[in-house]
Structures are given as C-alpha cells and as structure tokens.
Length: 168
Image 1 (cartoon, rainbow, N blue to C red):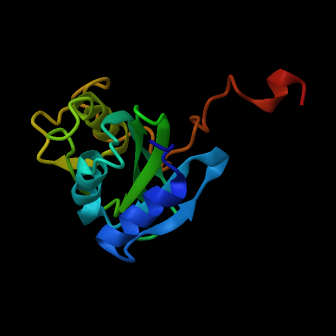
Image 2 (tube, rainbow, N blue to C red):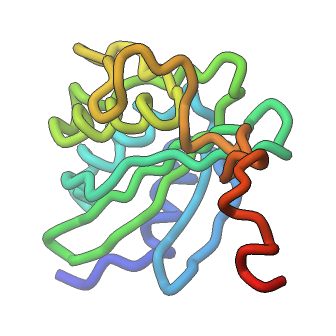
Image 3 (tube, one colour):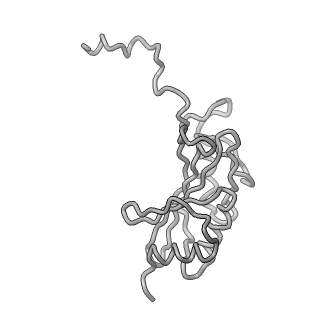
C-alpha cells in the first residue's frame, strides 16, 4: 500500500463534493482547506468513512476570530489525523459572529465533546446538536467570550501600567 498524499486527498474531496472547497494550501506540508459551514458534517463523515482516506482521529478543534472578515468572522478549525498513513490535515469552516451556528461533530468524534464546549466557552460558537453545550472553564455568569478580539487586551485606565513607571 502506498503512502497517502495531499494530492490524493484533494482529488478525492473534489471528486465527491465538486468545487465547494476554497483556501487550498499546504503550510509545512499539511493540507489545509475550507468549505461552507453547512457541509462540515458531510465532509468530516466522508474523510472518516472513505477507506482510502481514513481520517478517524480528531487531534484538535478550535476557533479563530477574524473581526475584519464580515459575515464570516469566526473560523472553526478541525485537525484530523490518519493514523494508518500518519497524515494530518486541517479543515476550516467560517461562520457569522452574529449567528455562530455550526453543526456539532460529537456523533462522529467523541473527542469533539470537550473541544466544542471549550470553543463555545471562549469564542461563542454554537455547536448545533451538541449534547451538553455549556461553559466548561469560565464562570456561567460570564456574558462575553474572552478570546474574541472585541475587547482591548488591557484595561486602558490602569495607572500601574503607566509609561512613567517604566522610565519611558
């Protein structure tokens, strides 16, 4: 059996879904691509089920906030691993920060349970169909999502951070 290549993965995805994918790249050799958010389960299920691909391990799931990408400010990023061929890929879906609904992948990957809760907790992505989407690290009373780039990094009124105190 030959080693699975990025080109074979790309061809398999295009053959199955057509021209829906964007942002094809290979940073540090890792195939990276994006698809419309309503296709995340179909794409992940195909990557899992297709015997020639066998991406059956979710290494990581997180989000990134891009405030300047109007209509797709939040990006959910999936890192998948084919253990047989030791190949990793990165799959992205974008969603609007005003309606951050993305289908949950917990039915396919048990590991997604905690990772989706953490991503909800810090970015506010609503994983539709998640069995228990509640805050996991922050307090329940928190009414914002701390890793979004909507807030300054520091309280600008603090006097102990004045430049005078640092000899500037």
